[in-house]
Image (cartoon, rainbow, N blue to C red; front, side, top):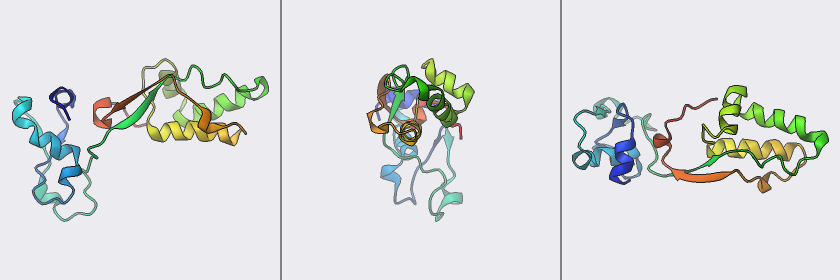
Length: 152
């Protein structure tokens, strides 16, 4: 994680010293903790490691890895037969809910890897090659930096 990325973390993002944790080197919260001196934050949140020590799996573990987010769905319906279009759109919409679907369509919200797989599965269920679906663009980023609500 770079200093610029660290400074993009929300102020309520909990840092973790990771003193009793075997996964500290794999956790973004611990990486954030190691960057405190360089980041220059006056205030920050901390996980109480004494309370979570020994809990398996750690409820605060946040993988120190980037995810491939997609943006935009303007071309995903290009190869759909007209007779199937309404059904496919309804299936894709059900992956997000109508409000989030329109945010995704307008590229105001990213599509997680899990949601991308659900969209591909909707096409596969309708008889299309779901693996051929390409979104408008992709971005590799830490999920914590995307600051997006998870809609389930």
